[in-house]
Amino acid sequence: MAEKNFLFSVIWALLLFFITWPLAWFCAWWWCVFIAIEGLFPFVKDITDFLFKIVSWPRVVGSAVLRGDSVFPTPFGADGGLLQ
Image (cartoon, rainbow, N blue to C red; front, side):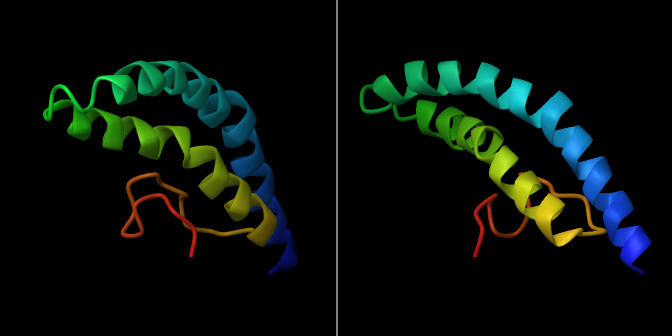
């Protein structure tokens, strides 16, 4: 069982370094741009909520690395990408 958890930790670490961090860096810039105009245009709130889930995804993946979760750490889970 410990080997399986270690394998998942390695997989999630690779996901963290090669997918979630670069994607979060890219989306963070757009999130900062759109959050500034959210008060002017109410429809932008949906965009900023989506981008915030992507920007906070590395936190969810990092937690999955430490726990060795076997479930894919998605940013669109029931908790909205926030840790409890």
